[in-house]
Length: 509
Image (tube, rainbow, N blue to C red; front, side, top):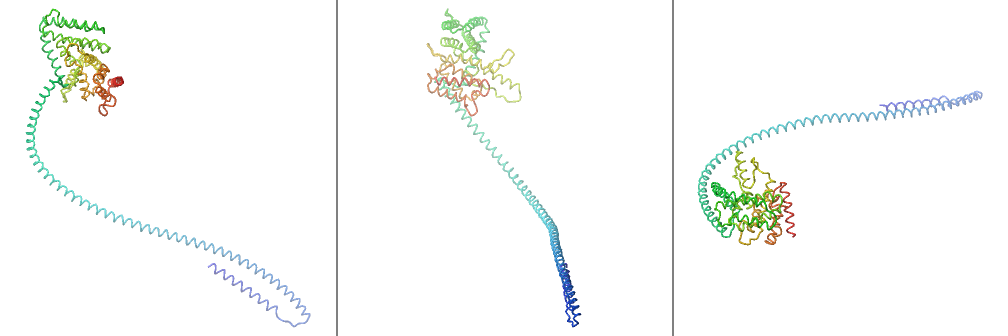
């Protein structure tokens, strides 16, 4: 529209210019035949008019230039208007496109949302159909499983009844066979036990339990029969009391002097075997042996626990009497078993294994077991502490181990006091895992090795070395994974250190 207006203006200007030029030619180009004056006038007029024409022409040129300039300005203005219009038109088209795009996006969004709603609705309907179908399938499956479970339960009950009937028959048959087998095994075991006892009797071997039971029963018989008989007779009781009062001080007077040791040994021998040749009554004699054993052990519990070197003189007197006094070995060892429990054997005395709710019975059973293992009670029936117990038992066993080292000059000692019992004691101990768990064990092992020292290697050679290596492993790495000899108590820790150093010293000697 703007371009059309510009073209019309150009055509109007062009027509005006042509019309003016044509008019000037008509007015000033006619020939004239006037007088010279008029000719001159005409010439003047002509010059005038020519000047006017030239002025008009110049003016027209100026106007034309101005018009051209104005046209140029108008064209430039129109061009600017055109460009602006073009920009506006482009912006308008751009806005229209953006608006159309936005409109279509909105439309497409609405369509998409509707499609999403439709898809969601269809998916929900499909899910509901699937859920309903799943529920139907689940219900059918549960009904089928219930039916199968019912059938299986009925079948299982039937099988159980049949199985119970078969098991009852089988149990009757098996029980009968077991009774027959048990009777056969019992007969075979009894026969084997008789044979084993006979073999042990022949070769002089016994079990730890048999040893403990033998000497425990001997002591009980001595207390029950011998001591009761002696105390019941006034004359016998007086003789026994007199002999006991003579024996006890002599044991307390011991020193390390060999002459004094021999003198005391001889004095005690004559108390038991009077010089006048009249033997004591057997009951009084045995009662004095019991009192002598008790005196030696009590001295060990007091003196040896304080100074281990005092064990040698006391063991020497005991050895002298074991070699010369009849039946002393049997009574002495039974008294050792009473005061030190199962440790001289060694043997772990079991309780009655009561595990019921009766706490009083449990306490009584534990007390009985502790007393049988050598624990002592004070006047208030309070059991001695573990450290006191360990010290006291170690003192008693130090006397025992020292006696085992002596070599008899006159006749073999009682079997419980012969040197092989040292080897038997160690091997029995190392085979009994229940004993290895007790904190007393490493203390007694140290006592045994300390007394035997390097003499064990001289007697048993490489076998003794192997035994020491086994003991060393038990106190360092453990006799089983995670289990050290003596457990984890402080008493066991210090004792294991002493055992380790003693073994190292003996093996390097």
